[in-house]
Length: 112
Ligand code: 5GP
Ligand code: ZN
Image (cartoon, rainbow, N blue to C red; front, side, top):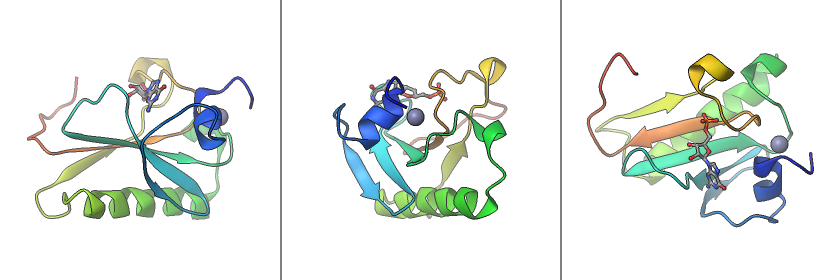
């Protein structure tokens, strides 16, 4: 989708710091990091939110990419959080499905 920010990042039309590319998605650093490590995992295919797919294989691949990013960032042992904000009450602001990988500091629970 030409008016989607994350589609534009995938197409290379908007710059981003890429952490990892896979055949199914890319991982890049969040512009407004909420933790020392804050990486977004996005599918190459435009899907507005988690509500818009039942593709278990794709969702599994994205979750595995999140795990791989945590390994790359040295977070596997100390811990990290994977978050999928879905629609307005959850705070989704970019309507292209994405997983947040957050780590590098202690996290509170419950989240705000
Ligand atoms: P959401 O609020 O939809 O769960 O997450 C969207 C995320 O995209 C936010 O954490 C926000 O900081 C990030 N973001 C917004 N615009 C840009 C951008 O232009 N580049 C990058 N790398 N991240 C962005
Ligand atoms: Zn998109």
